[in-house]
Image (cartoon, rainbow, N blue to C red; front, side):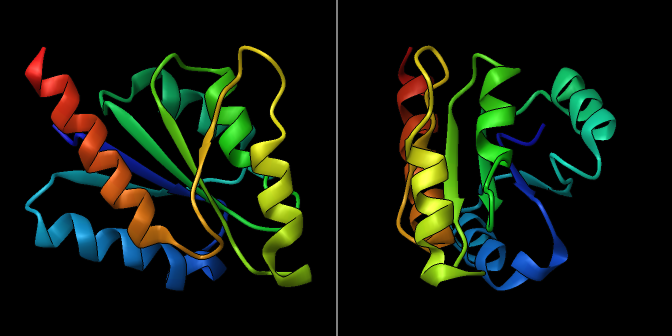
Length: 131
């Protein structure tokens, strides 16, 4: 079973999600990678979230950066958003991720910091293992 799911909105986010993959591989953490857009693949995204056994999601998204919030609205599991510097230096994506409405929390790491998202996910997994 993959403990962590990385979901990227586009293959153009590859440079960012590969940073997360590298950290997870170095720490021998099982993960799953999916390319699913909240806008272009909403049905596929819904089906994936419904069937996913992972304990934590890392959502990599640029531009409107809707992906982390959409995932968080459909699960009680932790979601870590990674804003991508696709436009406006990534500030548009960062602000979209951190300004979530009540009861739809999303953790957010720095722009293009897929590595920090993986480190945070590992810390969450370690806490869950202690229970």
